[in-house]
Image 1 (cartoon, rainbow, N blue to C red):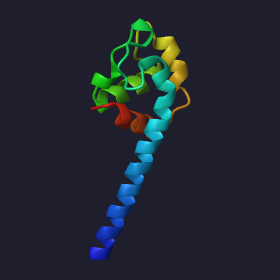
Image 2 (cartoon, rainbow, N blue to C red):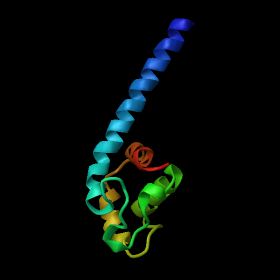
Image 3 (cartoon, one colour):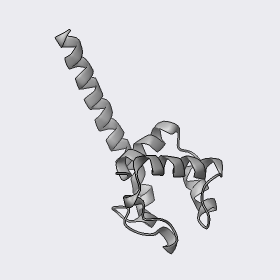
Amino acid sequence: MKKVLIAVSVLFGLWSTSMADEGADLFKKCAVCHGAQGEKAALGKSKIIKDMTKSQITAALKGYKDGSYGAASKAVMKGQVASLNDAQITALAAHIGK
């Protein structure tokens, strides 16, 4: 039983690390407009994403993707998130959000 728990812990750690790495890699594209730490209002119009929670970021990205979220930057963001799958959205939200 102890070996199983250790194996699960190691696998979870590897999964968490790879998810964090993926989120950081995906964020490079976002940083162009949102800033290296998510500290900028993209195009002078967006929310400061570093202040958003993981769930708010997930909802926003999924909403941009399906067209149900956003105002002035809706069209720009729809194109940015169109190719992201749910796992990538989760990884990105985990990287950015609180």
